[in-house]
Image (cartoon, rainbow, N blue to C red; front, side, top):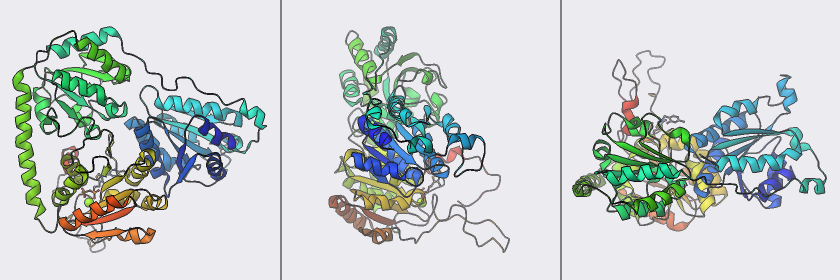
Length: 562
Ligand SMILES: Cc1ncc(C[n+]2csc(CCOP(=O)(O)OP(=O)(O)O)c2C)c(N)n1
Ligand SMILES: [Mg+2]
C-alpha cells in the first residue's frame, strides 16, 4: 500500500478524501506518512462530493478512497455525479479478491465493483498486482482531466494492497506522465465559420456554462464580451465568470435572450433540460455557435450551426484572432434593450427584497435581503448552495463577481452535495466558504459538518429552516386512523435546532429569527475564519413546491396541499 500512497504523491495528487476500514485503513495511514493529506469523513458520498469539488476548482482530480461493497457504492453516487457534471475525480476503492467474487463464494463484502462502476465513469481499471498501481494512478489522472473531465474508478484489490515489493523494483515503476492534460485545438475552418456567423449577428449573446468556469476562460470571455459588445448569460455555476452585475450581464434577461437572440455562443454549456433543450422557448431561427471540448455534445437536441470542438481556451484564442479581421453587425438597440430590461427587473427585485426584509416570521427573501449585502461585500467567499426554494432564491439574489465561487446541485439538481463540497472547496482553495442550505438539503450531508469542525475549516453553514421539503404546510390526505397523524411526505422538523450541532462539535452555533440577527451572526461567523452553523428560522409556509421547477412534476389527478 505504500506503492499506492507513493504513486499518488509522485503525480502530485496530494489530497485524498475518504472513509476507511478493511482493506484500506493502512493505505490511508501510508498516505499521511508520505505527505499526502487524508481527510476522513462520516459518509463516503460526502467525501466523494469533496473530491469532485476539489477537482472542479483545481483542474486536478480529487481523490476518493472507499472500502468495498457499500462504502464503494456510497462513494460511487458522488463519482457518478462528478461524471455527469464533468468534474475530474478518481475513486479508489478497496475490493475483495476478484477471483473469489467472480466465483460467488460469499466472501467478505462481495460485489463486482468494477462492472458496477463501469457505466458511470470515464474509465474503470482494476489493480490485481502492486506493480499495476503506479500506471493505474497516472492513467486515471490523465483520463479524469482529458477531453471532457469526469469520474474514473480504480478497483484496488486486497491482493494488490497486500503485496510486498522490493523497494528498488517498485521505484522503477514510477514515471512522470508527459502532458497529463494535453489541449487539442479546434480546426481552422470551424473557427472561421463561427466568426462569420458571430460577425453577421444582429442580436448576439454568449451563454456560459460551468465548463467555461472549469476551463478558466474568464480572461478570454472578457475580451469577447468587451471588444465586441456581446451580452452574456451565465448558467448557475458560471455566475461570476464575468461579473453578474456588469454592464453587459444579461442575467436578468434570460427569456429575452432565448426569444430574441439570433446568434448564441454556447460556451462550455449543454442545451439540456435547464435550457429547454435549445427549442420551444428559443427563437426558432437562432443560430448556435457551440464551443465544447466534447464532439458528442454537438447537435444534442438541436442542430448546431457552428460547432467549435476542442480545448475551449485555444478555441477562444483562435476565435478572437478571427474576429479581429471582421466587423460586427450588431443592432445598437440590442444592448440598450437588455440594459433597460435589467434595470427594470433589478428595481422590482430590490423592492421585493426590501418588502420581505420586514416580514416576520422570515421567508427565504427576508433572510436573503440581509445575506446579499454581507456576501457581496466578501466576493472572495465561496458560496455552496442547495435546496429547492433555498437554491433558486439564493441563486437569483446573490450576485457573484469572481469565477468558480459558486458550487451547487448542478446538472442532476441533487441534494446532498453540501457539506462535502464545503470541505473540498475550503481545502482545495484555502478560502472561506459559506453554505446556504435548505433544511431538507442539509439533512443529506449534515453529519459531515463534523468533518468541517474536525479539520477546523473556515466554513459557515446557514440552514434555511422552513421545516420541510419546500415548506412545512403539507397536509397528510389520509383518513385512516392508523396513519392520518403521520407527517405529510414533505414535512420535516420546523423547530429542529440545527444550530445545536455547533455545541455537539465544539464550535459556535446561532439561532436567528430576525434579519438583523442573521446579518450580524453571518458577518461574525465569516470574520471568525472558523466553523460555525446558523439556524435561520423561517415561516412554515415559506416556499413553494419544487421551487422554480415545479413544472417538471407530473400533474396529480387530485390536488394535494404541498
Ligand atoms: C438526492 C435527492 N433526493 C431528493 C431530491 C428531491 N428534492 C428536491 S429539492 C429537495 C429539498 C428541498 O427542501 P429544502 O432543501 O428544505 O429547500 P426549501 O425548498 O425548503 O427551501 C428534495 C428532497 C433531490 N433533488 N435529490
Ligand atoms: Mg426546507
